[in-house]
Amino acid sequence: MGLTPVDIYNKEFSKVLRGYSQDEVDEFLDDIIEEFERLYKENQDMKEKLETFEGQIGRYKTIEDTLKETLVTAQQTAEEVIETGERKADLIIDQAEDRANKIIEDANRQVIEIKKEYENVKKQMQIFKNKCKTLLNTQLELLDDKELKLDDD
Image 1 (tube, rainbow, N blue to C red):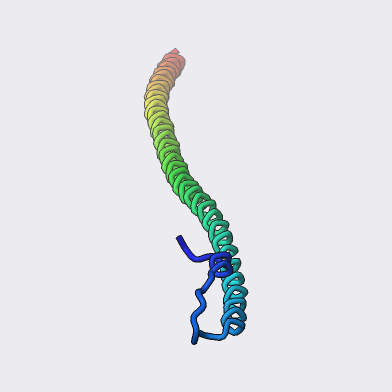
Image 2: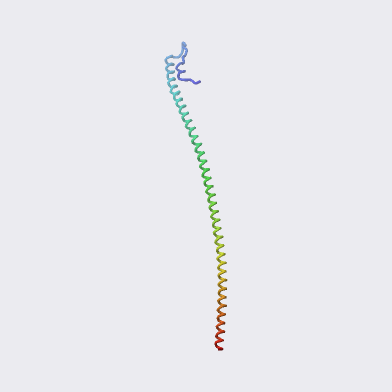
């Protein structure tokens, strides 16, 4: 156990014949007691402050740990959001490409159908043209024949 100001105050020295001056010793002990009390109180104050600071440090460490966990969670969440966004973007791109391919396929099918229709109309036009020519030629021949008959008559 440590020395306290009360221990110093209560300390009694035995008297000897040729010893120190009792008044000087008592006066010096009083000075020591005062200084020791001051230092003792200062030490107690420092211990209390130290406990307070240790408590604050504990709270700050808890806050720091919480902040670290929050930052890690925020970073993980940000990464997940980015990853989800990239997946959604890829999905949207894939869907757009599929849709574009379908539109192109439909357009190509329509072009083929229109070409077929065009070729069919072109053939029908040629057939109609040929029939008209044939009919006109036939009519011309008939007219020529009638003219000849009229001339003969």
